[in-house]
Length: 428
Ligand SMILES: C[S@@+](CC[C@H](N)C(=O)[O-])C[C@H]1O[C@@H](n2cnc3c(N)ncnc32)[C@H](O)[C@@H]1O
Image (cartoon, rainbow, N blue to C red; front, side, top):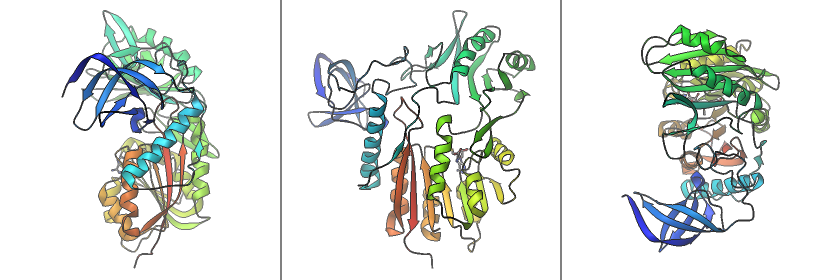
């Protein structure tokens, strides 16, 4: 259903922040989700859009502000679709996200977790080691930025507070280069530990070496990959950035997943290590990406198997694991890998870090049947995480031992969560 215009504005009280960063309010028994608000605020709402499962209101004025409200530091905030919590002080953002996580775990997962959920905070700004920039030409002018909020229009930016200074310093040079290159639609930019920059450029039409050469000659740029609708992708320069985390060295490239918050890489790994048994025979790292958790697992276990369906990510994982003889990397989906695993090969630990959609029921079912003693589940999507915890712990097969959160995404409603589970009964 479309918007219901109301000539008279209404006043709503925000009860709490829920999943997705929306404020929850009620009008006549109907739940209404409100963007850009904070708990306990009275706000003026003019239009309410009723969807199939929820209604959204347009906030025109904050009448009573939460004491933790602040002036958003970014000049593009509210227009740019990237951040949605900058209007809250940082410490309060973290509190709100943990409350929303707890609420989601209870509502979707049926999980009444009474203990504190420790959170690792992050420096507020300059934390992202990668970003996807949208590019368009409007009236002959090049526009580079992010999608505007709830739109596919580009909000042009000069700099982004979430990016490190050296990436921001690169942006105007990049924009200048793009004036001479036609057909660019998106640029994925990634920085390595050495502050070197890597680009993946998506263009309309066929990738040309001249485009790659022009971009690679941009000062600071170490590698460029150009992909397009026709022809083969073209790459010039170095293929991957080196990312140092503690004693480990990883390979990352803009076309593959890598944990985005460079300040919390070490915390993620240290927290995982604290949850691991001192030793073990075999660990599985399902959804292993470029091997971020595979390397630390291989220090504790005699053998570690990483499973990843994306060929480019698996190539990077092979680079990171090249000196480890106890790591085996398998191409394919987690679900098909598990069906082929011999019945007698019983991992001591299974780590899962799936995409936002979570794990399929077949993976949850395999866990309930084979009951590996230790499970570690990382997720950046509390709703599917809660659903999967319910599936895994169903029938009393697993108990949740610990929950921890990492604020990998300051200024946004997103949060990373790690759960450790233990099998309650051993498999027959
Ligand atoms: C959230 S990332 C985690 C990667 C890695 N654990 C890390 O921390 O960098 C999820 C990964 O799962 C991969 N993936 C998606 N669907 C998959 C599937 N069905 N089976 C195996 N891997 C999959 C993606 O390509 C991606 O690399």
